[in-house]
Amino acid sequence: MIQNEFLELGKLNILRVDRDTPHGLFLMALDGNDVLLPQAYVKDEMMIDSLVEVFLYTDSEDRLIATTLKPKAMLDQFVLLEVVDTAPFGAFMDWGLPKDLLVPNMFQKEPFRVGDKRFLKIIYDERTHRLVGTEKLGDFFERKVKNLKPNQEVKILIISKTPLGFKCIVEDKYEGLIYHNEIFENISLGEEKTAYIKTIRKDGNIDLSLRKAGSKKDSTSSDKVLTLLKQNNGLMPYNYKSDAQLIKDIFGLSKKEFKRSLTKLQDENKIEVKDTGIYLKD
Image (cartoon, rainbow, N blue to C red; front, side, top):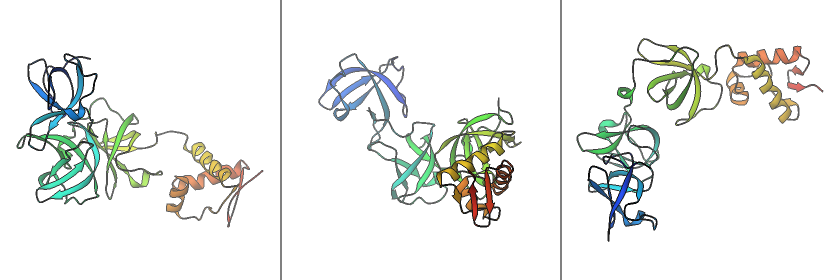
């Protein structure tokens, strides 16, 4: 491990144990500044001059303090957190530390309620010199997309549901969207997935697909129908006339893909489609 040169708020630090006190251990960075690791986090193996990995944040009295606990997200990271309390000036989120994370009213899109789950970014508030959360993420996305192109595989994080579709963070820096009519599987906020770039728009936003263009959808879709049939004793009460939303929920396919799969499987003499449903042939 390499010792930190400076104390870095909101991040993991590797610091040297400098001295032992009744209140805990004082840990020191290379620049000579130190921070208290309270007695509750001290372990027997933490000897003088040994290196310890800690997270630095401020306590209820705004004093810099160290902990061996790791929060659900650190400075400049995105995270889905639950509201555990509210106050006239903001809301408090459970981020895995004894002191809850504050989201001031000015950083909320709409009022938070206890039990809500909100997608946030952890930032440093210059006014209060504290770590806080913000729900207003637009200013943090890069608008000049570099080294990405259509059909490229990317890592995404689902951050919100809108009337158009699901907003995503693409490669930790860009804003993307998957349209509702192109989603044929269950997805949820905070979920990390692989996606493919459809279009990079002039405003820097990226249209995404969960399927690669040109992939063999027919085979994949028909295999999915066959697998579900086998799991249901060779009979399922669906056919060409079944409701599109029901098909999406059960098979994870669009109505068009489902109908194409049924036709393909019938042509291969693997199924029979009747008014009462789909039947697997011997």
